Image (cartoon, rainbow, N blue to C red):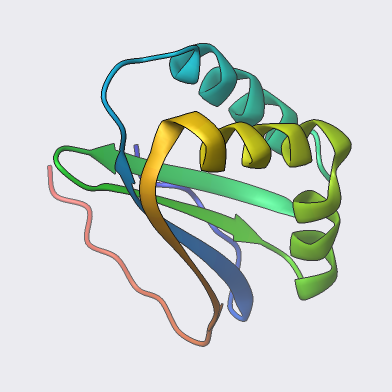
Amino acid sequence: MIAQTPQTPYYAVIFTSIRTEGNNGYAAMADTMDELAKQQEGYLGIESARNEIGITVSYWQSLEAIRNWKANTDHLIAQKYGREKWYANYKVRICKVERDYEFEGE
């Protein structure tokens, strides 16, 4: 699904990753983090896709909201597990969305 975001400006966190072999509890933690993120102040939405490379984009009202999410205790645990067992490599990019537009076909 495409996230419904407000008028610009807002912020995007782009998380690009390459997974390690096996699930090792990843799917359950990903579902938990998705639900927890939705409860955070300033959260706007998320989009995610995975093939050989995974890309997840979360949208936020402010840089402060992003900092608070990064520092969330449960999210810190997930980040630790990610480095230890789920990701071979990842990169995080934080962007200010200055403009957006869309097309909705029939």
